[in-house]
Length: 154
Image (cartoon, rainbow, N blue to C red):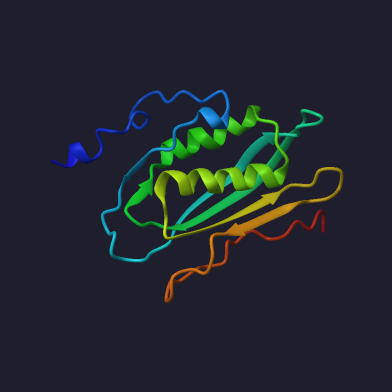
């Protein structure tokens, strides 16, 4: 019976090919075993990489995705493959960060989501991007994302 819940998964347990582009990635979901309970799920990707759309040089970020699931959970391997697809994608920090948030929303339809994109300096200026869908559910414990602002050396 349990296996039927997961028969739609195509990436978990398999080799898991990295999509050529983020748009080609499939973000898979599984049923939320606790749909009547509000709780926070956090994904942290401390080694996110994308390309500058102008220079083609790599940009690095620490992404933190917090969401409150409704009926579905994001399957983590498919998320990893999706995020890895950005390594060949040219996009500004803001576009990359919001694209990730929108893909999670489209796939899992969470009750609430926030994302923090903590980008490492480019041209001496770190760019951090933050977005959320609205106010978190009442009574939800929402911890700090735990990523310090960039301070350079010292």
